[in-house]
Figure 1: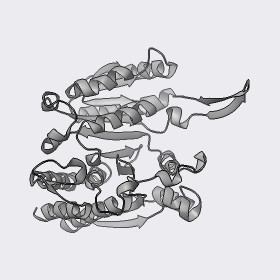
Figure 2 (figure 1 turned 90 degrees about the horizontal axis):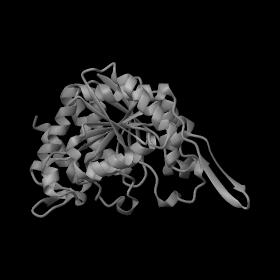
Figure 3 (figure 1 turned 90 degrees about the vertical axis):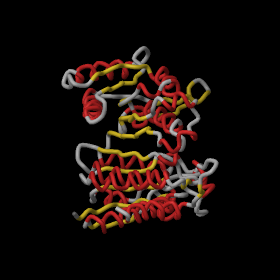
Figure 4 (figure 1 turned 120 degrees about the vertical axis):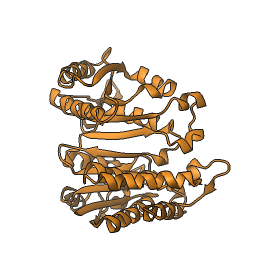
Length: 359
């Protein structure tokens, strides 16, 4: 199988972690007889430095003309004072919108080898952490109208949150279809006691649930959900929510798993092409020092093989290689614990590749 992958290494540690993921993909291609063609583009802070904009037209064109996109991370303090319309994060928003990537799937799963790294009490972790957050990605307050104006001698800011039935219905179906492949349970998170958008959200979720009699649906207010994630994460299977709530809850969920450096994510639309990335930021404080954890990016590449390329066996092989490496006691600094062997970014890639080659 021949696949073209657009590579956005991005800023900070992005180039280091994406390079390791590409090394892993090259081994998979060799072992399974595939060809992965990479087209690297600039986006984020590095694109601002080179071209004056976070997402050059050529970069976007290659994102739209490929089989999937693999991203490292964008942004950093260097660009904090750039005008809002040209901030590095605008590259991500632009790619998601133009590619029609309306659903973000972010797993929250703890590796047994890293149970001690979770900030939760051991008896909570022992009950299990294995759920996925399905976040609506291109609607809501992040894409609504916004303005800041002077009224009565003071500045007043306004951000508009808007959702249509169609936007809610399509993300609902993603959640219910995902639940069918898991434990068949969906928790829809909203703020229906306050917001009109949430009341519409809940109404549409109930309507779509009728199409999936084999999946149970429960509603939960977002503030309660935030508490329950740290109180009893084992109760969750699939969580579906709107853009801003999903942004916040998915970051919270990632932290209870022990290390933000281990978690991948996928952004998908109606087709198979998607955007795959780790959930962490660009970490400029450790960039270029061979300290970054590449596992989140490597697992993002595994998600790409599974969800966009229908390469389930290849994806599982990468996941097994990561598990085996952790079983051997290898760790990067972010998830290091007593008695383990500390590795750099490149050396962690070496160990995962070594296990892949044993298959």
